[in-house]
Amino acid sequence: EGVIRMANTVRQAVESRDALARHLYHAIFTHIVARTNSSIGFVENALFCGVLDIFGFEFFETNSFEQLCINFTNELLQQYFNSFIFENETKLYRSEGIQWQELDFPNNGAIVDLLQAAPSGIFPMLDEECHVVGGSSRSWHAKLLRAHESHAHFRIVKHVLDSFIVCHFA
Image (cartoon, rainbow, N blue to C red; front, side, top):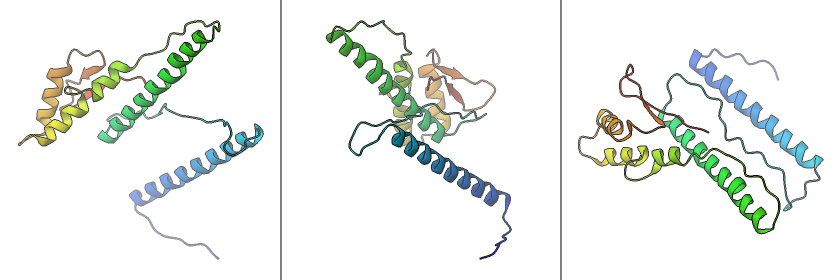
């Protein structure tokens, strides 16, 4: 029952601001979903309206390993979405004799393979490097460059040491 004032460091203030923003986003999103579901007559265990946001709006000068994992997950979701919506629906329409105009949609399989395909995907190579005696970020990076320098979705950054770029869709 009053005002509490507390001095914060810059880092604490930034973390508090970010936590508040996350909470507000969650509250607003929950409210929008509830209003949308009520407007379409949502009934428990019935069909529902769902929203999947697979596109991030992050533009960082330097991405972290965590961001690479998030981007990989987005690529997997995009691949699933493409398969489920475009490929499966096309098969269903054809089997039911429904007129269907072929749609051209992006195939991100090469990006997913670049990241996860064994043995030369980025993640399997990282896993292997973690098990090698004397493995290091620098040797992993050198192996990545050798393995993927000609890949259409892999870029070498010559002016930034130990870095690379994955050009991805989602």
